Amino acid sequence: MIKFVIPLKPVPAVRMTQKSMYANKYAKRYLQYKKQVAWIAKASMKTNPIDGDVGVKLTHYAHGNRADIDNLFKGVTDALNKVVYNDDRQVKHMESSIIKCGKEEERTEVEVYRLEAVKQ
Image (cartoon, rainbow, N blue to C red; front, top):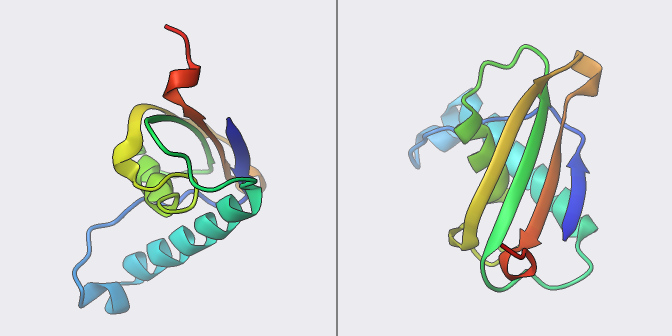
């Protein structure tokens, strides 16, 4: 299991075109967030990206955030591509929650685990 904390305000994924990714302020913010998340994840990795099916559990601590939970999930899992796992198509189980908190406590707690390690 890989566990780490993203000590940043959760940022949802946004729809964008090739043109808008350079002009839209939300797209720019999202792309910068993904880059930061990838670096944080890379620093937490002790091995190569996981092969096979994985589960991902995210706990988002957000202050006044009205983002859709699925967009918050996508923002993190896209950033973990080629870092924690080879492709987000490997994610076969997902769990995500949003907990309200103070502005200074905003973060996302991440757990990624191999599914074959979970006995059902």
